[in-house]
Image 1 (cartoon, one colour):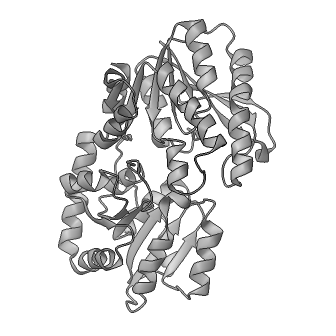
Image 2 (cartoon, helix red, strand yellow; image 1 turned 135 degrees about the vertical axis):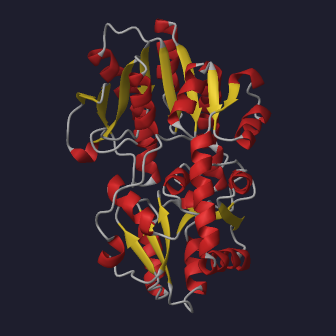
Image 3 (cartoon, rainbow, N blue to C red; image 1 turned 90 degrees about the horizontal axis):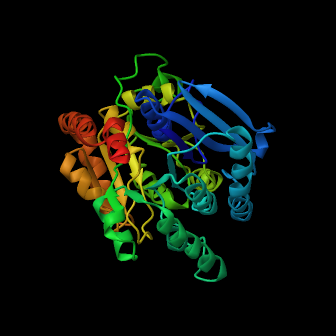
Length: 391
């Protein structure tokens, strides 16, 4: 088949793969002709380019800036994406007949392009639902239920309507969308996935470089945004200042990073280090040196979320310490895996109790890490996810 994969965050496949890179490579390896259209932000100062990487045609479409920018600028870029992608796809692949179009959320604003492709090509359409917008924006206070909400809500409903099949992250996610009026026959469980790899070989000793020798090391890796409510992680760090043997490392970028740094500096949280995004190799090495991986979700969510970053922790045989909202069924999955401990965001005594338990019990950490790795191989492989989509 000729497959078109639309998204806004696709990696350089020569440097790493990640969630969507793994899927594109897997489908190409099965003999499908993979065409990826992804965003090239204006801040990089480059024109639209096409490259072939690991058997995948990757079209990087020059458009506006979307990541680590203000909400107004982000909104304008989201509105411009569809037209920019349409023009680039038509210019680059004018004679290709697409059999399948795959598109994850975010964003939802490719809906007009998907409708057009379905009409012109008669192709199947598959939505990978990883972000329920605009409700998630309402939950975390970015948007109110006014004009913008009503506009994006109509776009969301069009996206569900044009999609032949919708893959949802978890059983609670499936049920949430079904209750929203989407026909049950369109919905299926499509958990997050990855290409399971052997442990990263020894290399840079980041503990030594970052002066963390002898510390119990808790690592957060991912987006530093409102959805993560990492202020509550800083509450835990503040509560742990009496423990000189515990350190927290936060790796990544996001629009809340400056605020979080300011809070940590103001409160003298010298047990917290903020690090820029590192290479996938160095992040894997860091996880192999760490003692626990952190998952954080805002207490305000009313929609269920399942963070994909946990798969990095599972692969590294790292137990998970999670702070979660009440809507998600991620905690139930963690219990089923036997791979970590969780509490509700805002319950600091429970959060601290779970941390102390993990600090005190190395055997428990090893067992949870082993169970997480096994659970990854059973439930979250890219091969299994590709089977679901192609079916």
